[in-house]
Length: 161
Image 1 (cartoon, rainbow, N blue to C red):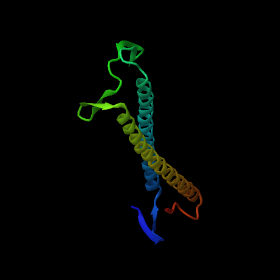
Image 2: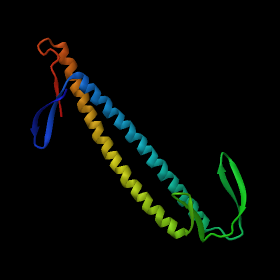
Image 3: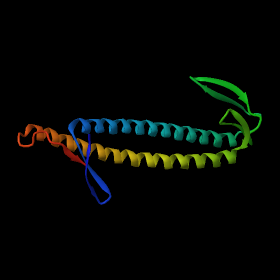
Image 4: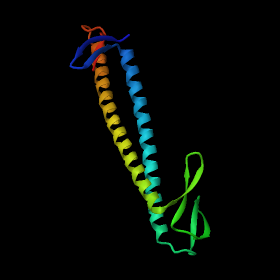
């Protein structure tokens, strides 16, 4: 079990044995993977919003009754005729569909993008903190391995801050 050694300017120093240190390292690696996954999700959403913004700007320039091709994915396009470029349908949570003006949608995109940028920045900061913690744990493990090969310090626990 980890033992609390001392409190140092708001930081606690904890002594861990090798198995606890390895477990902590694995836990931090897992946290890094989750943060990376979440960062990829945020990037994907930001890309979708950017694509939607570009599309909305193009829609503003389309004339009524103009014929266009709609990409439904997998290389499949459907020919359509534009009836209205002022209002578009937006799906809200719960599959509720409402009409919104393009300018209102663009404002919504701007806010969502800012929220996602803020979340991304926080995730990056947390990721960097976890990297530093992993480096500290790795250094502690190296010290433990060196201590085990040194007969004077028979595998004694090492401090991890």
